[in-house]
Image 1 (cartoon, helix red, strand yellow):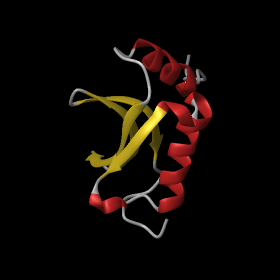
Image 2 (cartoon, one colour):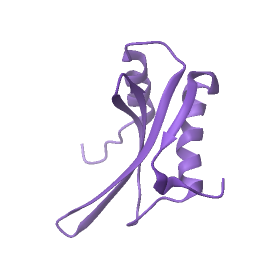
Image 3 (cartoon, helix red, strand yellow):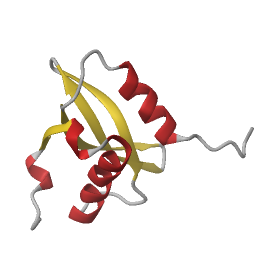
Length: 102
């Protein structure tokens, strides 16, 4: 059991299939960071937003403290596009902390 690997893409496809309306979707990216004992937990999340509720679809555990950089944010959005297609994306929103060159 300790060697079990969670298929995050399969979970994302399941959540996507259970959403209450059809695409295109508004998606949001956000990051959360907290400390559990001596361990820093930093997660970048991509969620589909529907009627004020964000349904987390993809996440990336960040092996560092602090903000993500542009390449990491582009990577998670591209992952969404590879799984579900560009045509399912209406628009993307993010906090002001995600301002970058691209």
